[in-house]
Length: 81
Image (tube, rainbow, N blue to C red; front, side, top):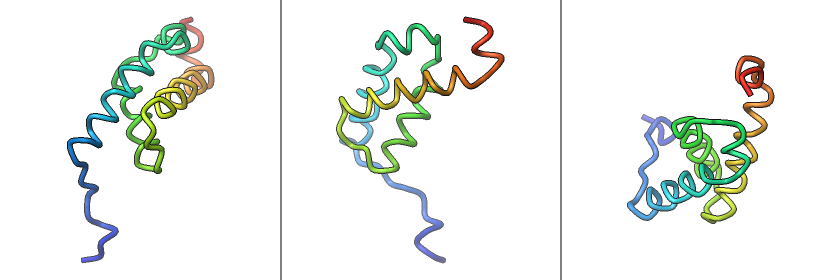
């Protein structure tokens, strides 16, 4: 079994950083205007954290911007706003 097939293990501090970033990102005007839900925001934060973005404030900012871009590129979601 190769190590690449093993799941990622997160420590409590990792989960705390990701949870904080989701809350911060969800409260931004960008996220409020787009109407993105928390689960979608959490998935974005998780992906960014997994890629190495570990600063909570920067993680929240990038996640909010990414969420806004995702919503604007999705025709069904963009049409609702």
